[in-house]
Length: 255
Length: 272
Image 1 (spheres, rainbow over the protein chains, first blue to last red):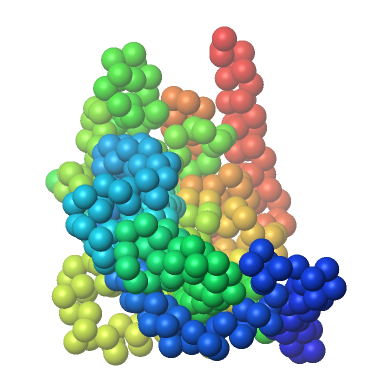
Image 2: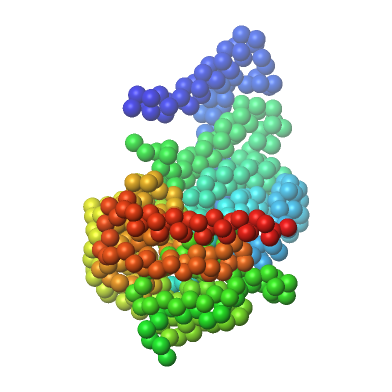
């Protein structure tokens, strides 16, 4: 029990330690605020520009969630198709792998031409960067079925659909939740990158304008806010995963 | 029509695909087999002799390249719903409780499927009864990973029997268990069969297992699989584990052992 408490407190401890070292270095070596702001300075500017940061953060948050929602829908559907048909798998998978290797930031200028400056490119960049892991994980979960179990069910007259619904989908749920954790953090990356060049709102825009105004404390607090939002969402999906597919994690969370 | 025979293989050959058929590479060859209603047969043989192919043919998951198979007087043309299967791996679904795992076939096979919602209480009662006959009373709400290997295998056999099949096919079901658990499960299977008198086809490596349980033991040769020996086991029933230590029993086991030994020998000579 005591060990559990220590484990839970460990990341906070590390955070406090890092900030302390950071602050000490900045104070002792008298590093300029315009080069590398101290945590104190960042906190100061965060409070000072609290309202502005919150507005930009909210924009980044909902844009990311919209792109991520789109990624879930498309990722699950595509994953379902390629996981349940060998032909579709053979046809789609190589192309998807090639697509996934492209840097998504390179799509932003094209998306700007198509959709203009604003939420369009941001939502789509978040979507493009995050649907791939969801698709792959659903497909993998569906494709891994023991041949014996398939025989047992087929003898009973089970159709492909029965096997998919009774066995394939439940089996792919742990993979699905696992992929959501990865995808949500990627989605924040996509939104922020897109906002840096193709928006007048959002944390990405804030970072660029703060940087060009030499407001380094503000730029850093923007980074902190994105990191914090991604981490909270990650923990949320991690919690949902543990409480819906506990059977797949019996080794790690058994009492 | 001879209604006496429940299972009737008439000159059955199987090649897995057209190409192998063209080259006359058969997985099983010229199988002729008549099994009476309610008979318990065991098939033994070296590994890779086509025992699993035989199972697929019997259940209709594979169609023979030549010959025909009759079950209950009717030619087999597709998956046979009157059969239940269990394998060496229990392959239970980890997100379902033991009870829900056993109920799974009823959610799929007709006529139970369409009645599943209305008669759920009946079905649950039936599953509980079945689980208690194999000694799993009180474990209904447990998940498979909370059960031992032997218990999982008991549950797997219950899943194979829940829709009251006329034919139970077991592919080395006790192969992965320790010796004591295995003998315990022999008795579980013996009692289930004695009570319900379904047909059993047991594929196994274990000669003692085959002699203890079966009415008739068939020995298969290596690829291409053929039935080379048929041995009726005339030991009196009900059989008790004690008989496995008696002279009659061991002499039958030795006799089968020598058949298998000679198959392995001729095989290694004739193979290039």
